[in-house]
Length: 279
Image (tube, rainbow, N blue to C red; front, side, top):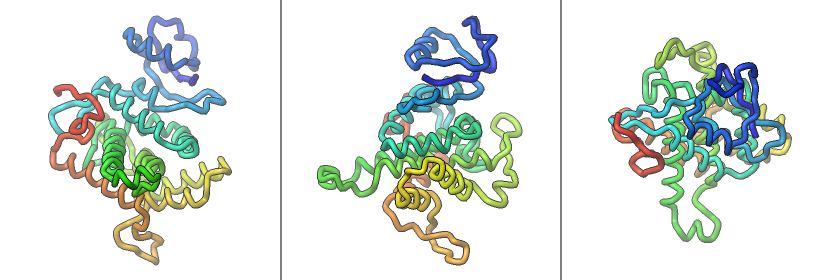
């Protein structure tokens, strides 16, 4: 069960209610029947341990999303892919993601915003597309690992932690940008003085403090994966990448950006993680 804030609704009798409870199966059936609502925000009902925000993300996305090549991505299949990726997280990692992204309308803005102002994925919904591509690249890296390593339970890197880092790595850009018009973004003071990586550190620290039970070592590994750099700068506090997760995330992130800049087909389509439609 979750709460849906409706900015307006159709002929479903909900026009007088700003918040309604929705059961996932009923929501899916309504969408299949062509009933659409303008959704201004999503938040879970209290005591819903299995809440998966990507199960409902389609409510805030258009039917297709454009990418660098000539094929558009089916938004519902994108949400299905991200939903399955979210289920691969450990319970503690899922809980931390929700503790971070369900604050201050962050998740809704994450679905809407661009991933950059002038570089890769710089249009509306670019942030969720780039994030999904980064997640896909992480999964491909995991599948390419030694079968022997996986069989003995010692993979080359922690999949759940790396997927969590991939889902979060650029999410704080929603506090870095002004959306001036459709597909038009400008940086703000937070971007100029702090930046999305340092902002994400604050978000992670706050969520861990609020939960009180997220392991400190894991918190540090997550923060390192997101913020580590190629060359260490001791005076500034930046640290050179040291963990497998930080290297995997960096390559997955860069691969998505490179493919976009070259006009290549999205990894999501190339490896059939999602469905495409001719643009």
